[in-house]
Length: 188
Ligand SMILES: NC(=O)c1ccc[n+]([C@@H]2O[C@H](COP(=O)([O-])OP(=O)(O)OC[C@H]3O[C@@H](n4cnc5c(N)ncnc54)[C@H](OP(=O)(O)O)[C@@H]3O)[C@@H](O)[C@H]2O)c1
Image 1 (cartoon, helix red, strand yellow):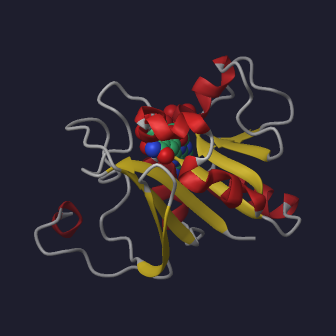
Image 2 (cartoon, rainbow, N blue to C red; image 1 turned 90 degrees about the vertical axis):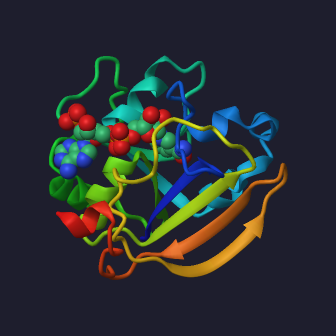
């Protein structure tokens, strides 16, 4: 089982639009269902993991976003209307244990957001950070950092161009490097 964070972002580094929607929703190519490589990615996954903030909008979606996956949510409470099969927990260590107990050999799609990616990285459980960079500039929104600590160590693994002009870059996250001089992390 690998825990694989996969995040869409604009070319200027925002994971949400200025109005707070996930970056991929602003990409016209995303609506075609072919861009962003999500189908191939999910082929190897058996579970989705996310923070409560990312999870809650799914409860009012017309379509359940994770029909073939076990779903795990980190949050202080179980949002009203959460389907019975969804596992929620307020403790990331306990949630990780529950994910490992349920493991059947497939990977875990860590959907986000940045704070939850950071939480699992801090536990040493994040295997890859996979970025899908859309050919869009937002000029505002939520950045990947500092929700995700800029000191995270990234080792390049592979890249591919996706239909619609996005580029996927896969990094592995073993270990951490020293914070960049002058970065917020170096001043803590
Ligand atoms: N572009 C993309 O691919 C993508 C993907 C996912 C999300 N997003 C965007 O990211 C934004 C949300 O990101 P986010 O980082 O603010 O929120 P998030 O990670 O989705 O959720 C944060 C919540 O998770 C829980 N949590 C996180 N770390 C915890 C810890 N160490 N201990 C206990 N609970 C913890 C807390 O829930 P409680 O408040 O209940 O305690 C916290 O408020 C949304 O706007 C979403 O659209 C974008």
